[in-house]
Image 1 (tube, one colour):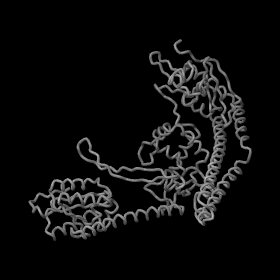
Image 2: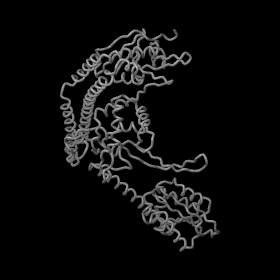
Image 3: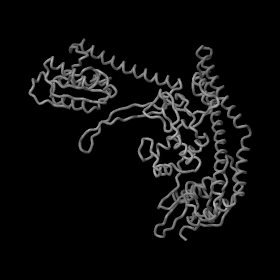
Image 4: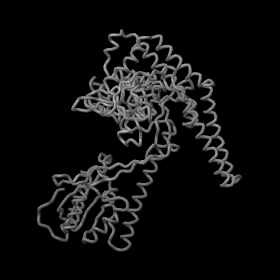
Length: 571
């Protein structure tokens, strides 16, 4: 704000208000200097004395919360101005708040002069002003609707609706309508998926590894965000879809342009609706800030529009394995700078099945695993009273597991048997079964289209139409559940194969001395790869199951009951 210091006629005091909303700054006739020059010329011609200038650069006229406008309203309320001059009515305000501000000026005896609407204060003049305000709001809504429809149409044509930056690992082509692979960054994404999905490393550990190696963060800094890594794991741009799946997502014209032998990721348009408001916040020094506040609402999935993007080069089963790894975000405790090897649901209570917690008695520097139900909710929740000494229990478990690793043939035999059982669980050819379920979903979609045609032609009443659609919706849900179950089973088989190869190639070849020297963190990773299950019992013994649990309740054929390594609380 610029306040003038000259003595002026109290009937001719004018305040100038200029505003741009951001992109308009560079347009002729909307920039701040252009508006100011126009207003100065008008005031000089009309003999008005300018007492103050107010400007808001980068603020929408749709909100009251603007620093320049706030200062102007304070001046109006203090009686320091007789007329407010703006270049256009929509520079002053837009929408419903226009009338609110007009009434505020009226209460203080201040006139509003808009150079594009110099009407008098008669009823006809007021009506004309209101019509102009309403037309401006109507024009804004029409423009927004055209933009929204244009973006949806672009996505339906199989084109990316480009934002400021592409998804990490991709880049825009010259037209900014399609993705291309950015090999440098995509190599980082492939490594992230491998670390989380294949090696069982946590998001936090991945973040620390990237930072310690100096891998630049997506925005160019040094610090990686856990939330960013998690969002990438869950993004469908990296999850490969077959052409059959893509055909169910995109329009036929887009599908016809795709390579039938290729796989594609999916970029989704319209997953959320956003509204933006302004807030006035008073800082500790008394100054005001006007931050934008963005509110987002999820859109039903059936309204999303999918756009095919290039193959990321990340196997589908690896993406699914990474998603499964972060699904519950189970964390291995590192309390007291001691790495508890059997947390993260590796060790459970043999009485109630709940994951064991940890207890560190600092006075004696003693560490124990104990039932979280018993010590969290009382004896009524679980009768397990045994505490298992951490060092002894971990040594017992490692002695057993390292023995398996030191016998490669025993390890290979156990893993191969489990893999065979998993493969036998699928009675049909998995690709044939997947095609069958996809065809079923396609048939359901066609049935829905036929029903809608019959209903619109008035050959089917509303009640029967809705009943049949509900039946088809239930069939769709069943088919999608079975399809996901099939894919999870195939992903699990690939995960078993991958972990088997990693165990045999990486650990079974290590000489015994090096194997026993592995760090606790590395031992914990091996336990997760083996899907090691440990149950602690009241008599102090523990039971280890080292092969993989399948979808059936049958347990592995290689379980060992080991002697007690625990102690009773208080003894």
